[in-house]
Image 1 (cartoon, helix red, strand yellow):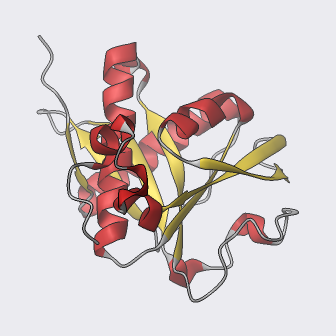
Image 2: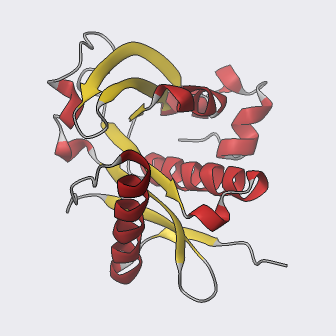
Length: 190
């Protein structure tokens, strides 16, 4: 029986492994190797032998404007200052960890870790962009479509922009939604 990977904020070695996994997965599946973002915070899922089997990154508010902000028709879809907005994305999973149960656990575990990190860092909102086929996955994780999209030259297609209001998740407004507790925990205090 496989051991459940440990999800954590990446140290220097794990970060490098996460960047390498990201480059391999994106090159193989999208024909595009994303640039390395030196300011990104990486989250990784690591197994006992030290291999990184999934990774995810966050670019904080200091990295604004984000790549798509000048390329997207998104007036009103990005929260204005003084709200602190982070960009999350580049979620990738090694192919041998893509069974439904493993992949779902890894995806939601990485999202939960990113959410907790952002909440502790005083970030108010999360944005991401994704291929249209993954919009439903992120909506299940309580992200909302903004209605904005842009053409990404690396992917050679339009990508959808989604938003998660951390304040909304941590408030009682969504307390009745079981996904809130499942994905983001019981502690709704900011």
